[in-house]
Image 1 (cartoon, rainbow, N blue to C red):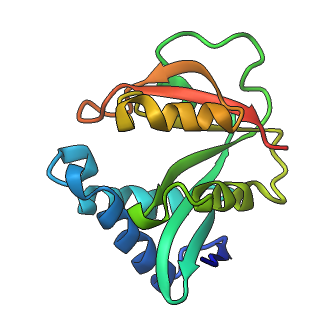
Image 2: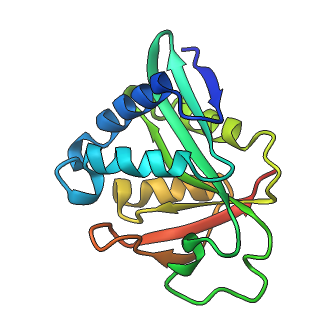
Image 3: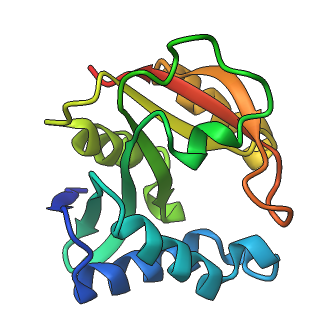
Length: 176
């Protein structure tokens, strides 16, 4: 199975549609929850796409979008850092960080390496020294967080971005 990767630094209508299609498929069991509703995610996506350093990688099998990863740059004054549960060490936010806001891969392509390829393509060429992401520690009965640990991410804090969202584990690693 060959997955073609397409890079975007702006959210064109076709890329937005493809990402939302994959999101709805990947998150189907959760779409009834307020924080996971497709319209709520679409609003978040549009906000993220307007933030500095936005980048998106979409994976395709033929014409079918099968996965995505996107994120953007955060600096010391970003609310991403302000919502952490525990105080951060001095200097922790002194340099910009790429924050991956979402990763998703349709079920038939899970376990094929597609998610890792999409993730790594998102990091290619980035100028930030570190990359961070959030994971629900209960996702896949802990398997998702374990997967990120095999990609060299380490838990460093936690946050609950909104009252409707689950408590998430914050993870970080070098971009290279």
